[in-house]
Structure formats: structure tokens, C-alpha cells
Amino acid sequence: MTRLLTPEDIARIVAAHGLPDVLRRLEDAITAGFRRWGDFDKTARVASHSARGVIELMPIADATHYSFKYVNGHPDNTRSGLPTVMAFGVLADVATGAPLWLSELTLTTALRTAATSVMAARALARPEPRTMALIGNGAQSEFQALAFHHGLGVRALRVFDTDPQATAKLLRHLHGVPGLAVTVHGSTAEAVRGADIVTTVTADKRNATIITPDMLAPGMHLNAVGGDCPGKTELHPEVLRAAQVFVEYEPQSRIEGDVQQMPADFPVTELWRVLTGQATGRRGAEAVTVFDSVGFALEDYAALRLMAQLAQPLGLGRPLDLIPALPDPKDLFSQLGQARAQALAA
Image (spheres, rainbow, N blue to C red):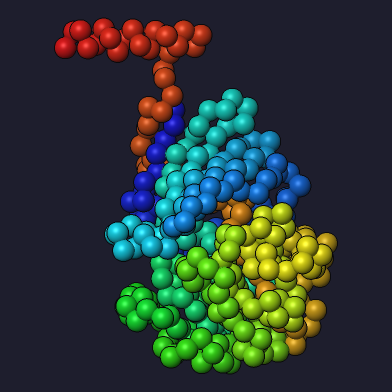
């Protein structure tokens, strides 16, 4: 029987465990997945682009479970009362192909993206970062801010967005968070000044240069989250040339990440190699590091499995008649007869 997890279910899981604990569990689960990178059948996501956005499928599997995520990115959606990003996904049993869980992944994607950012920064940023600039204060911003606060001990958050209402929303949600001081700045350059970590989570579908070379400082770590489809970037090419660049899955990042601007031989390192000790992370305290994050299916796989595990003790996830229940599994046609008989009886 397939079970359904709704946005309310995910919110109840977070309420039951607390946001810091759920983010920590997600980071642990995603890290464990990256450390067994070779166990997975991987592919770059399949994208359908239009003038207003993109719709993507993100599949992955190991020997036990198969998962996929359906996700969109439509920056103008908020004008119609819809989220920029909407997602759902399936976790299936590889041995039988049976779909075990159908889950919302809009909330879960925001949670896992923030957890992945912290995972990368833990491996790449200088120890004990205390100040982070957050450029882009939309739907993902609170998740990133709180993940870095609870996970890495960030105490000072310097924020900027071209939309004052987005910043006001962020301030409202972060008001009163113990140990986190938030200051609003008038430009990106002002916000990044003095930051140990710079997180960019902008939504515009265009080749933008949110971060330029003159904004870099020795030892800075850039967590570039917003550049995630062809034609959409956040970092000036010279920023990439000045840094050590790390990606999730190189074949996908070359198409969708900030490194799409660079020659095919531009050097990048897949993050799993750092997490398993097969590659060097930060080369020194003065190095500039970039995590060119586009989101990868392994992160959703880990998040789906974790949410399913956390849902069961709470009694969450209602049964869903997604697959026909057949007395004889070879007799699919009988399902039509049953429905016809019920219609006649009514």
C-alpha cells in the first residue's frame, strides 16, 4: 500500500522533533548518501524549459530504493499566488517496483537544500564561521538562515534583497531567534562585507552577476544556491576563476550551475570526493571556496527516506489507493468490471 505525506504531515514532523533536530538528521542522511556515492545509479535531471520557467524530473536509485522528484521553477508564479518552486516525489521498492511513499517535496526540498548547504560549508568553509550574508530573502531564506545558525553557529546575519517585502517577511520569521542578530543592508556589496559565508538564493531566471570579484575576501566561502538551470547564474566568471569550485554532480552542474559559464575543462571537484577523503577541500585559510549547488536527486532520496522513517512513529502518512488491489494480479481487466457493477448497483 502506498502512503501519502502531505505538507501538513511534514510540518507536524518538524513540530514533533524541532527544526534544529530535523535539519541535523537531514544533514546526516544526505552526508551518508554522498559517502556511498558509488552505490547509486545516477543521471542528470530531465528538464523541460519554457519561456516562463522549467519543469524537471530528478531520478536516482540504489539496490533497495528508487526515488524521483517532480519540481518546477517559475519565478513569476508569486504574482499568481503560487510558489516559485513546487515539488512532489515517490519512494519505491526496487525489488518489486511498488511505490511505497508519495510525498510533498516543496517544504522538504527547502529543508534538504538548507541541510545540504550546511553539509558543504562544514566541509569547505573555515572553522567556526560566525557571520553570513544572505542575498535573496525569498522562500528559501529562512531555511538557510536557521540551518546555518543551528548547524554551524552563525550568529550574525547580514541580509539584502531588492524586494523590501521579502526582507520584511524574513525579519518577521527570524525575530526573537536566540543568539542570532540580523541586520538589513542596502546592497549586496554592503551585506557581504566582513562575511565568513555568503549565501545567494535569488530567483530570477537570468544570467545575473550577484557576486562580483571586488566583493571577495580571503577565506570567504560562497554558497551559491540560486543558479540552477541553463541561463541562470549568480556569480561573475572571475569569481569562479578566483576560487576552488565544488559541485554535486558534475554532468548536471556543467549544464545548470554557475559553472555553465566556464570552459568545459574548467576544474571542479564533486563534493562526495571531499566527504570521502578522496579529494582536498579548502587548501588554506586564505582560499576562497564556492559550492555551486543546483540540487541533486540523491538529496531528495535521502530526505524522502528520512521523512518516511520519522512519519511512521507519529502515525502520519495516510493510505492511498494508487495501485489497483486485484484478487488475481494477472487479471487487471476485472477492475473495470467491478466499477461497472458498482455503478449499476447505485
